Length: 191
Image 1 (tube, rainbow, N blue to C red):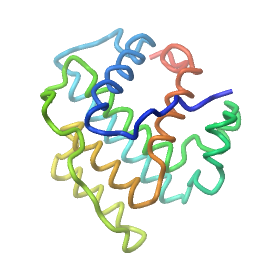
Image 2 (image 1 turned 120 degrees about the vertical axis):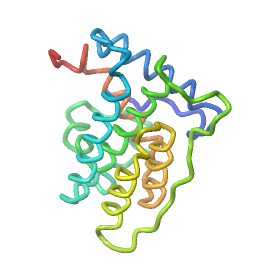
Image 3 (image 1 turned 45 degrees about the vertical axis):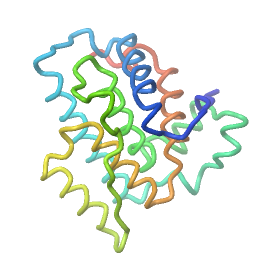
Image 4 (image 1 turned 45 degrees about the horizontal axis):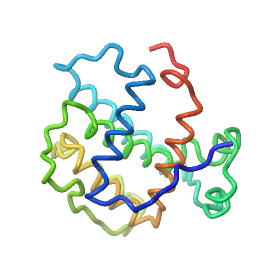
């Protein structure tokens, strides 16, 4: 059974560094940094983030949303089975949005984070969905203008998307983190 990690506060500037440190430590403990190369770290993070943008858009294009299939209050109180998570949430738009947020948290929690403690973790980024391709257009502008170079801008983008689509970001991030804890070293992958 997966229980979303308990959320004391919504994601705010004051707790992002603490959450980021925990996410990075979890990934480190699970073998994702065994071949750590400080010189290539940021490039690797950028590539993973661009891949997640693609997965998020693909879920959107396929209209794969978890929102209609999951009763969040029920899951928070009663948990969700791993198989049920895989069936109802995994690879959905919300799940990919959570992955993008988690990759950014990992980057912020890493020793290569160039943000100062005083910097804002949420760069304001909001938009209105006017048509089916609004998200795609906004993502392309975001990528073309290299805003994905900075993890705090990605947090702002993801938060803006979640707000626009009325997605409970905290629930999806904490549920995905809880699911990841069931997956073993490197999430069962050899490399």
